[in-house]
Image 1 (cartoon, rainbow, N blue to C red):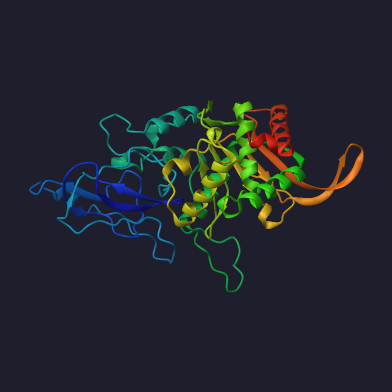
Image 2: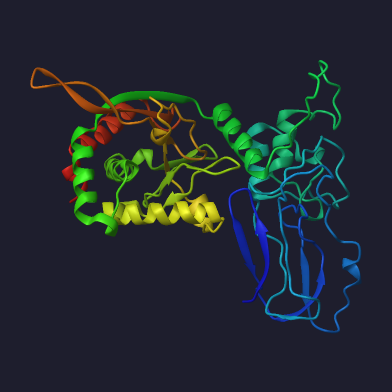
Length: 395
């Protein structure tokens, strides 16, 4: 139960507990080391156990060039009591440092190809011969990234020749861990998910009136934002159109009961979109409180794993940056994302009269493998109906 290490992923800092009792005998990873998922970072054992097999088992140090540390492992001094034995991570994770592998003769495995279930399924779908791959996982095990590298073809050489001379003074800028994750996931989304887009103008005049009335009434006790209203409207619309509360995984649609709405949060290194969990059972007030807590913890790196991995739908709001519209990219494996711009003064027609109102542009990006345009239009119109009748969000 003792906290023995802290791992910094591309999205959060995660404390690692000891799972069993013993003595903290050997540290294999130092602070700042980049560690692949499944590799040991320390050894907890009995006082007289032989640890010679771990000699030289340290992990590779990060590149010498200056960059943000990607993985931190901190531990008590040697011989300090701990209450667990270090174990490899149980599954593959997107936060592992990727390592491209070329197709090559595998290491001897007594005729059996060692591969993770995910890697086997992906290889079967894409027609990849696992016996031709060399695994980069624990003990030479073939994992998903090895199959993906084989599908993509031979990676570029480690030191490619530049196609043109760089401008004077130009120098490569190493990507932070977060930027690497954003680049990887957004490329995956645009490459694999056939996006379609539906846009509407939403009259936010009544919402603005209702919101200001709530904030003026409760003062410092409660302050709701435009985004809180949008998240609440999306949660109610998702309950009525549950197909948009889905993941597309391994060629199948996984529809979720819990409505976990992700919100985009801008950090210094990039954008992160953790989820407000169980929005289907939260009031507007509870969503507002949960949103503030999520933003604070995202900025301090204290998110819970389920908050950055369990989202089922995303709202990306660039309204605070005074932009008219945002066409967003879906977060895989989710099926849709709503992009919204700022609330602006615009001409609106009510009862045949042209009046000055408050209007917000909203754009739904959805995965055509999961839904069709007509479904997207119905879902987006439901969000608009709720926001244009904000009293329905308070019930």
